[in-house]
Image (cartoon, rainbow, N blue to C red; front, side):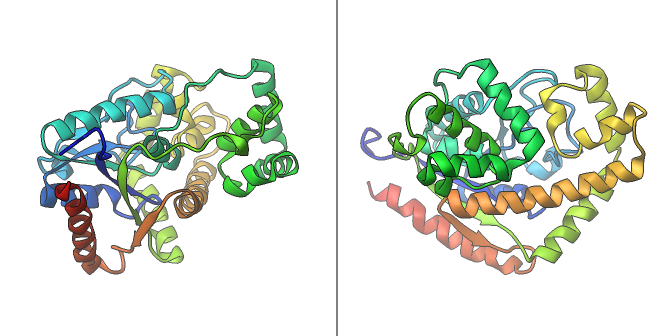
Length: 313
């Protein structure tokens, strides 16, 4: 095979929380000689196991997993760092003759990797970025998106309202004197097959609520306390849903019932944003293994057919 002309194949498994992504990744890895690369923004942190639904050694079933537990809470970690570490892992997995399977719910991380986005550009002035953050906090993502629509309609049409980070980046570019939509769009860096898992909304929300209850039974509060004590309340790690909501309670500024309700509500809202992102930003093939576990056969057939493309080169 000529690796200079054929893009390397990677399998991406994404979609909202509580839909079975980790289990599917292991099943596909065992069927197609794959290795799993974490694509979740918070499973990179050590000691954040329960709240991130981190795959256990038993659940890995002998399948190698990468980019899990690579930094301690309190250490900032960017999309650019993920992109570089994941690209290196993909190269190593393929060098072993195995299929790289990137799995997670952080859509921007996965898409930045797939497209090879240039994430290392010059940062805007701190004051401008801080002003955008304050505007987001005060007015919400809809107002920020509306401002982008007024100055760069094409960019606004391409970026979901919920992707506030991307909206702010687009406004930063516009403020520098050029249209964000006029930037040259990257050619995908990989031949990526994107699988998305979802299920009927009411069932999904029930699964999310039940998962939060199970996490609490498993000791989530003690885990959040350990992260808070080790990294402090302003740590990037504590921006994660399932952690940030408990900080006021653990600091004596709120009650547990309110915190639990907030985790469930934020998790449901995040699942909705995840669905929107994958539907509009990535060429996703959707499956529902919750209601239709037999669709695993369809997934395996799709992966096998896709792999034959590379094998023909």
